[in-house]
Image 1 (tube, rainbow, N blue to C red):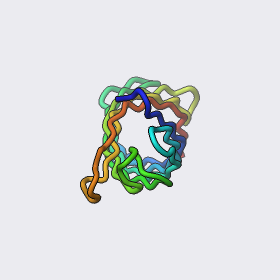
Image 2: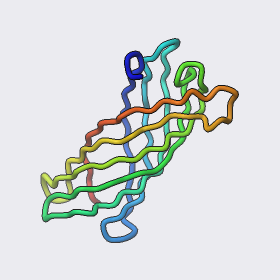
Image 3: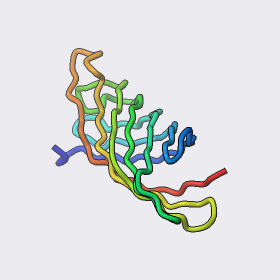
Image 4: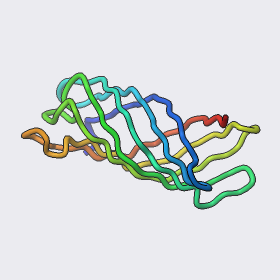
Length: 137
C-alpha cells in the first residue's frame, strides 16, 4: 500500500569490476521516510552485485541485486523496528557521456524488514527509481 508511505534517498558508493561486466559495489545512503505515524531519518549500507549483460560502445543494460542494513530514528515501517535489512533487485541502463563518465538509471524492488528479529515485522515493499553519475578511475 503506497497511499501513505513515501521515502527519498541520496547516497554514493564504489564499485569494483572483479570479472568482465560483473561488479560488486558498496553504497552508503541517507534517507527520509514520510509515513503513517512518526516520520524517520535513516542511514543505510548496501552490498550490490551488478551484471552488465548487454553492452555497446557507449551503453550497457544490467541487472543487479544485493542486501543492506538500515538504521532509522523511528520505526520503519510504522510499528516495525528502527534496525532493518534491505534486500533489493532490479535492472538499469548506463550511457557514456564522456570518457570515464556515465549516466546511470534504473528501477529496483526494495524491501525493508527486520527479518523477525523483533516481535513485530510488518515489512515494506517498494519500487525504487534511481539515477546518478558514475566516474571511472
